[in-house]
Image (cartoon, rainbow, N blue to C red; front, side):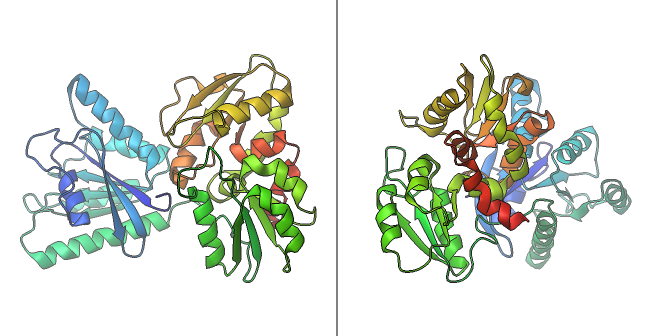
Length: 405
């Protein structure tokens, strides 16, 4: 799911947002009605876009919805902007007014690329002069479209033109795309993946970063060996080939650090996620502030997925215990799960600790931390915080520091 690109469709009620979703996906996944306000909560449709790969189309409520309930629908639609890689803004009847302009201001604030689409052009054609004005003012693509064209070939061409603009705008995103093992694995390298099977492990499967790690190593021509912490020491002793890198679940850092020779590079899955999809430099700046925590400081734990916590929960149990032991301070904690809003003012926190973010996209993770970083609040992530508290931080980040030089 995290490799999918999220595309949000915005506009006024009855502008054809749901029809556009259906036309792009080739399925009737969104309810289409002449009654304004049919779409309430955002509706998501996963599909494959040739040349892009997996994508999630997000159908939002009309930005001009009215009343108390309508205001809530609009707010949910606005929250979607922080979670998408591209926005498609629909307008009709050549009317581009305050509603549309306010949305564009939000797109720009969140650095979300956008396409402007004049829909229902079979009824009222797009005014070329207005389209040229929009192109010049907003420096974006403006496209004429209709979901109800009777000519199948014309409709097909319109869809193809839109998809080509989607590809163009997403690929021009400012995000640096890199994998967990970019510049770390060469063909023939032996990579040891340490994956504990404990109460925190999901039933019958590996967690997503472990699965992604295996695939990326294979794609790079490397050799992936997967085992549990108790097997590491004997495996190292009997290994006939050189081990190029050991990657461990953060919770096993101490044991694995003790069981492998110092000349074998070591890091963690969560640290690789920090490097590949987040602001690694800000994490490095923020991690040492763990030692500055004092009595009464408040720390925010950001979980990017919702799950049942247990007595071994890494974010809610283990990290608080380790930080208390490391700092010797009495710390107050807040936990925000999924992509829920952070309700307390950011500046109330002395530190924010983000999970690896394996279940959300790079865009969503970036947006999650944007306000925190802009407020100057130190930020780190699970793996880096654990490595610091265990006294093996320098060793754990060294493989990534080397490839950045």
